[in-house]
Length: 226
Image (cartoon, rainbow, N blue to C red; front, side):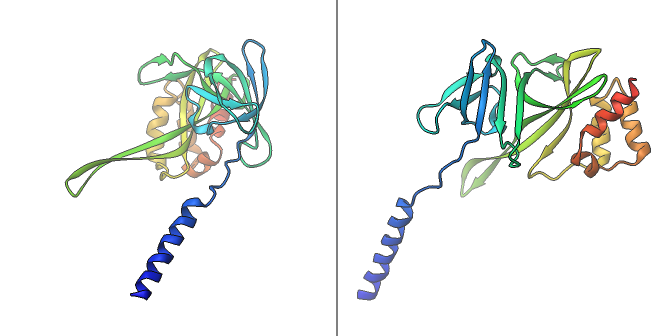
């Protein structure tokens, strides 16, 4: 009986320690937020970069109440150590063109410009993949949502620089598509510029090579327009 009491005591004590253990402090990146009205704020970005589709949370101190800023009010957002390399990354608002709906999204997204050619611009857009699954467990239906960080790569050409078209995506956790599947996507994404996917086939580029540097496709496109 004493042994059982001692075991229960250890279990309760262990649970109490675990419950009271301090959670690791979240270290938010330093950032500079510039608004369209000219206001410049130095502080901390309090939003994961993959969840900035509509707005960002910003705080001028490490503690205190966060302030929400809608993307349409932002001129630029400079984030330090965005990729863990100690460098700064600058996000600017752009509008995404939905190819399937043939229309420009009404609200801007925040993206990094990662390519500047003679006729082509390229951007990196941090978003997320929502893997929502429905399962039945012991007669109860449950929804499970798993989110993983993802990057979309966009381009526009100077003949119509309002159309920021998505042409590649990279997920941290999902298995990458095969090149055969990618080529089908490229036919749609570069519908006006078939020379892009034709060159990919001709040069024998692999999906892995393009995933390492998606701007390869923009270099091909820019060269074809000169």
